[in-house]
Structures are given as C-alpha cells and as structure tokens.
Length: 171
Image (cartoon, rainbow, N blue to C red; front, side):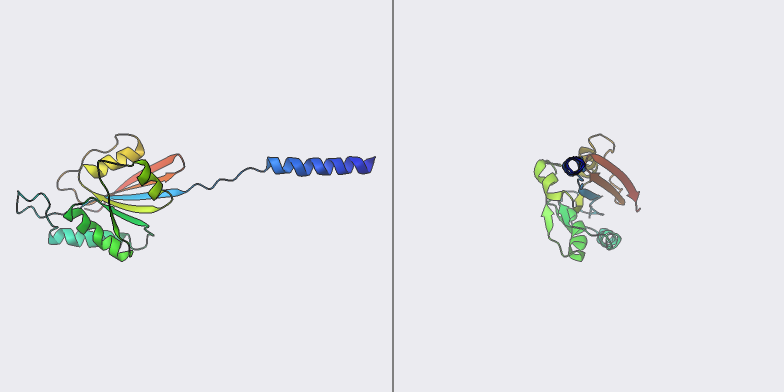
C-alpha cells in the first residue's frame, strides 16, 4: 500500500508540475529612431523638393556616425530628396536599402508587423516626425518642429504593451 501511495504521489507531482510551470513568453523589443530631414536648400522658394545644403549633408553624416554602434535593421524615408539624402548615409553605413513610406499611413498594421522586434530609423519632416511619434505613443505629446530645428532625435521603444520615449537634442 505504501508503494501504491508513493507511485500515486509521484504520478500526481509529475502531472501537476507540467501544469504549474509558467509559460515564459519572450517579448520582442521594437526601437524607433525618428529624425527630421536635415537642412534643406531654401534658395529657390518655388522648389518644393530641394536638395540638402552642405550643412545638411554634414548633419546627415553626423546622424550616421551617432548610430554607428547601434544595430539598425531598417531605414525609412518619405519620398522626398531631402529625406532620402538624410537617410542615405545611415543606410549606406548599415548596408541597407532605404524603404519609402507614406506619412499619411503612419503606424499602420503592415508597418507595425514589418518593424516588430527590430530597430528602425525613420526620416521625416517637421510635422510628420512628431506626428508619427505621437501615433505610436497613442497621445499628442509632441508638436511640430520649428523650421530651424534639425537636431532632435525621438527614440521610442515598444516592448509588449510598454512604450517609452525620449528626445535627444543635437543642435
């Protein structure tokens, strides 16, 4: 009888231990670096799609240098010359192609799925960059940048339901 109790108890422990083990779920961390395009050439007020100035090209290279030690999986840009020229040094330094995004479709399900668990750099504009950050945060935390503000980087990290953000200023 003692042997039967011992077998039953051992069987009970082995069955319940299978159910009592917590399911450990690993959460992917998604990190976004949002930057505005760098200084653009304003010499022709009719040009809606200008190149970067020399200062802008230098700042774009500085962004690439700042991100040199960070693993970047994707680089996004709107389809404007100035944003692509800002993204280009970053993409080249990481051997990545620039992915064009439509700022009218901020944080749609396809974008969320594509970037989940990855580190992405998103180059936008004075109005779209803070708007994109706000969309991910789910709150209107940041307003449009001034026309002379080219030195902010918004870093947003998403882990499960937890979202954190910080703004660094490199002016």
